[in-house]
Image 1 (tube, rainbow, N blue to C red):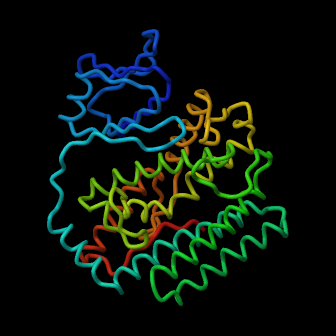
Image 2: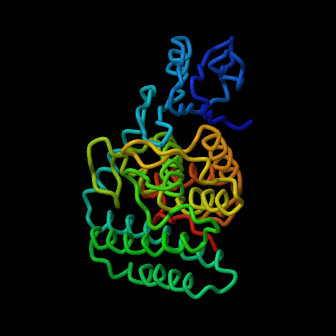
Image 3: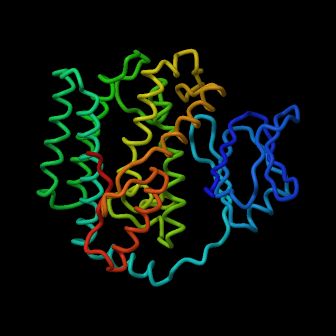
Length: 334
């Protein structure tokens, strides 16, 4: 029986407990969701959502994370139980971080996976042979080809940044609606596409962060993203290979199938635009549906749902850290 990731998007909703079930009620008291507690892995609350004291203590006692996110996708906080991580694994993780060559090799693998997937994804979208989009594919491909020559992490980040500009230029060319998207802008997202991308990346990060912690790894010690207080650098690293195949794919599908229109977004003072409540729910549903679709494991080629591949990749990275694997192999689409 699969774990449940409970997303609560209804504004004014309240989390309550009835026996061994977690119940979500609307502002008026109607039941919106009702799930067995033993299956809940994480609860994500968006915007104005409350939880009773009984729910908070139950989630804490059962090691179920409770995450708060704003309606425009900004992370606010997280309630989680103390985890008894593998000390041996973490010590080895710290040791490897202090070895420049080991760190560079792991960072290069992360970027290579992201760029290879970006290139293939853009190629798949270019069924009509659009020359402009073809140039974006070549741009990403040139950055991918240059990765072996990158002498340090800063050089890798430079190539990744250049490839990202090509990628989002390609995304702009793929979209069948003009929703004002010109380039990737984060804070604040000025248009519906950027708003959905930012929101989706927040959801994806929480998935990857949970997988990293469950594997017993320190999420703060990555290889590509610089260390910074309160930044889960490793989770951000391992998230890179999933951005395009999960979030960008969801956004493209919603826009091109006319399931996201200008009317689904509202301006926020000094913060660009955000999704209306109904659009928020549709996005979460599309995100969950995409996670249930399958991708190929980079180690043995077997196919698993994307949500399971996130967990498998965290475990593969752990095996790499412990010396059980010679290298980390990122997910790539073909």
